[in-house]
Image (cartoon, rainbow over all chains, first blue to last red; front, side, top):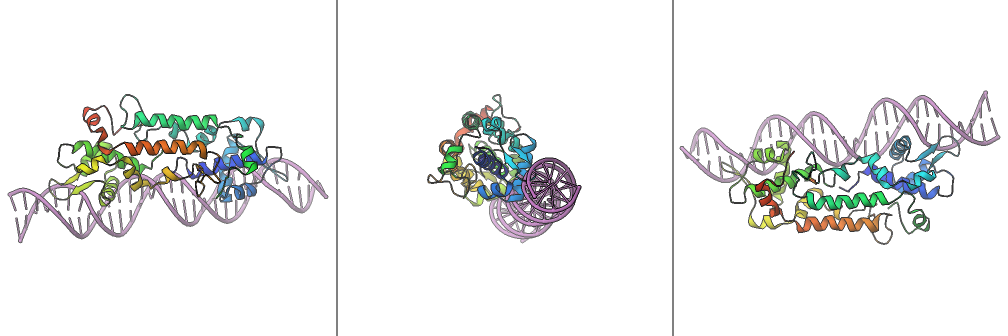
Length: 145
Length: 145
DNA sequence: CAAATAAAAGATAAAAAAGTCTTTTAATTT
DNA sequence: AAATTAAAAGACTTTTTTATCTTTTATTTG
Ligand code: FES
Ligand code: FES
């Protein structure tokens, strides 16, 4: 089990892919995105529809349609994607699944876990969607295999 | 979605519970463990059977039977439980679900994520099963609600 | 405006995770 | 040895996650 759900992994990879593919304008179709991040196309379609409804990615129908990101979207942090897909359990939930993470009657791991949980949040909050466009274009980073 | 599966959350809480309940000898039955960590009893039974087969907890049948931990078990790190239940994806897997986490063609989050992943591993490796017995007896830490 | 294109929406399907129930096996006590 | 106790094992159900397929809607282009 990873930190994110499979849906969320696809979502982040797809958004990174769309970001770097449309950095200089244009749109990218679902087929190309699915191939680019090695994900099942119909499943990814569902995910992107959801992200589109929530305003995290932009989309256009018809010829030359596809997905893209506006300037604002590129500046959004990854937390926006994660919260949209997986909710905020990762940032606020108890490591051991207690109904309520609290300082008052904490689980044994609370003290140490909240630090790490905070670092995950910090990483996702400071990392903006457009951050890796250059690395992706240069092929330094990968989104599949 | 949390860091651990629900099964793993129950497993860790149950082992902590058994550890502190049997710290001065004796055994504790599945009913009491389930009540003590607020988990569905038959599901927990499955989990403990599995941990018992893998030697992480000890068990005895018959009257006065139940689960307990020997001295060695108390010194084992939490990683043993997590690996037994969830495998090692959390410690070695890619944050974005790439088939292979590697330095050669890493995903965009690799550099930062591997640090956090390492901290999680460090926390679970340095935390021994018997570590919180005292806190649990004193009621400073909780395993339910 | 007709044809073509591409995403949106909706209805299913398959697989995995979580949870339940029943029967069996092993140990203890009388 | 018989009765009792408690975990082990196995079969089964439900829920959630992951994935697929079909139809509809919107947009563009000729
Ligand atoms: S109570 Fe468990 S992490 Fe806070
Ligand atoms: S490649 Fe993604 S975390 Fe290492």
